[in-house]
Image: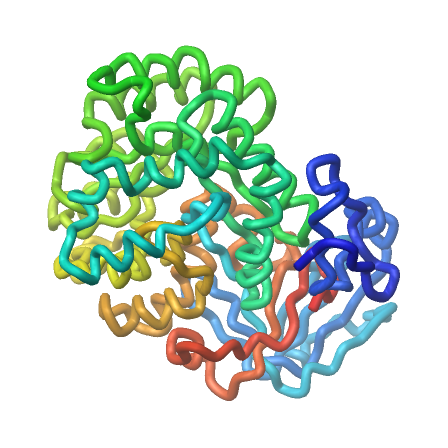
Length: 442
């Protein structure tokens, strides 16, 4: 798909060392290098005649709005009639009444992997459970074998189309987890590929070490030793290589215990790294209560959480990340406690959980639609979940997630009549243009 294609329009990011000889993306010809953006820092761009959803805490809407961007940041936003009198933009774009929202944020993905697990999906259709398949050596371990065998180039080539699909829907920030290598070398390989993807496409990427995703065969019946290896050796080395932005753990009966998660969190704390947790997806082990006590950025899945967990997450500020594609893909019956989370005032984010096993999907718009229909979120809650709360789940709320002066000029222009169409459509993409760092890239 990528090989031997030339960039369009002369604006393209030079391939990285990992991508050289292969992964060339031509789908977003407006993408320009960061140093080129810096050179344009004095250019003032006006985006006018728009309806703007700021996605702030009040979910403010500006019906006849305008936005000024300069140097990759929002310089001013408000009603068009209130534009500064001395405004003399270098560029001006009439949006003809289109809606603008912040760039969408997919705050939980496993985007880097090799192969698929379509055969396991067929097994689940015949009645086998996710846990049964995992205990028989399938599941995460099946993908582990494929990732270990894959080169960085292969991983990059297979993963970039998934990132492209998200970008085409207006996703400008993505979290990517490791967790399919389960050796120091292979976890590092996955994280390097995630960093390379950020250089190959105009998307901000946050990397998360999820080595505590499953117990690899080399450590069979030695889970404590494996956690020690991650905490004492792998994490410090990967941190030194600037490959890790956060640390995650799969706290579950087929994963790791609360005590083991605690030890991993301690190691992350020593390095000043934030933590996240997969918790209460298949059972309730108390993981989300630990995550709340430790001030985790997010606690994700939460199907088996209850009122106490919702209240703890709200009190700590830990974002509850809902993953409806996994719920759908596993044909799960127990839903996250949305009413309890709402009553407690918990922040709720939505993400694709894109992975080859439980959530083989790369559409955040579809995840929004599923969250409204399957989990009962309102359209407004769904939009907040992929903007403001998604940013908070990554610790990026000072830079992204809302439209306001001083923040990154990452936003999306939508060809929709009503804002509620975001969370309404499934199988249709109304994204008209994606703006990254103030530049139109699609």
